[in-house]
Length: 545
Image 1: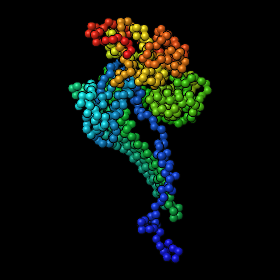
Image 2: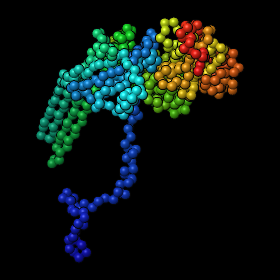
Image 3: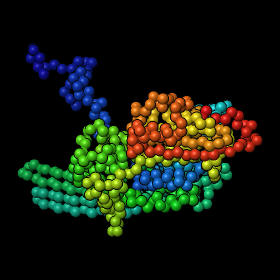
Image 4: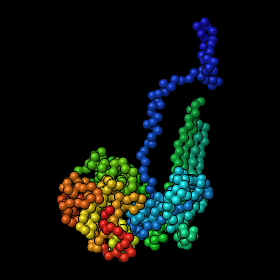
């Protein structure tokens, strides 16, 4: 550009040479972009909340857990080999999916405990390296599993079926084209159970299933010319089903089959649930989109009231009400969803799935939605399941000095309190305790008494002197200690004063929260004289130590 003397000069100095593609390469000041860049942190966040990874057999895993608990299946140590994919087309962590499936089948039954140890040096991490060091120095004991899972992604047949249609039209001033394509890919998974002691695969304990992934797309192209100007218009729509969800479905199905065959239980009852229909969630999503926000909120609130999460009321709470958010949060925690307190599609789907069934025509149909919308559904009772977990055949009588293991499971999130009445007449609170200080616990998860999964439990239960003992657990909708007498609000593992029996203690809970807002169960057992060898090793007797 001309300078003051009329001569043409350079706008860039020698330190910033002219760029061949621009006039001058003068650097921009970072301050000019500060406001623009300040939006980066907020923009980088996901657009939607995360949701729990579910498959068609997620409820079947819960069904297997309950079935194995009812059958009193003992705990089995299990591990797994690496699940390879020799095709290289399904890059998923199949072994981790196996661990998750086994864990979900053991929340109440404690049927499986996974032994985590990796021998492949390339896959070892900090925990595995520390484990190796401690094992070599005899500072750690690794329990030998009884079973192991072996398997692999056996095949991936891509585009087994492929269909493509295209058509076009051409004229002097207009061109049009339409294209549609469809394809199907099959993934196969083989899994087996093996005896770890002999490293032999057990005949009959195998699973071989395959799943189909579909892809489809369609597009429309339009082009025209007006005078010397041209106009183009393109629109397309594509669907690609990912391999991750397909593999989770195969892994969970295989885990159910292997667990059912190993325990000799009728596992097929858990595979014939209506919500295993492949269109189940998609149909519920259609119904969710058809309704407005007010209708969805009212139906979910009626469901929560029927399950005891909310007090029954003719007036619906607004979506942002604190009581509603608290109830939704408890429900989400109980069903394994991501806790947000919002009535979104995952809450809608988990609340109304019990009101969907497969009709005679094989299609999904709404069942009882009109009654639910009108608030005419039956209120589910609040229950507590208290069980002795000892592997002995007779769980109503124990020799003196025997360690006793129990567990409590509640039907919905509530405050849980457990007390032991020993043979000497002492009543001691064992739950909550110093390791589990909170009384509020979620549903569908076994609370172990004591927690034998930790190396140093808060207490142990030992059958004391000859006589009888009892264990009582009480679950309440609200914290009862705010209304209980001070002498009953004592620290854990201390003898309670002024309480004559567990029945009297139960009556105190009923007076504080009401009989309709609580659930209670009591287990009793007899203490038999110890055998001479056992009596010498038992030492000092006591129900709670």
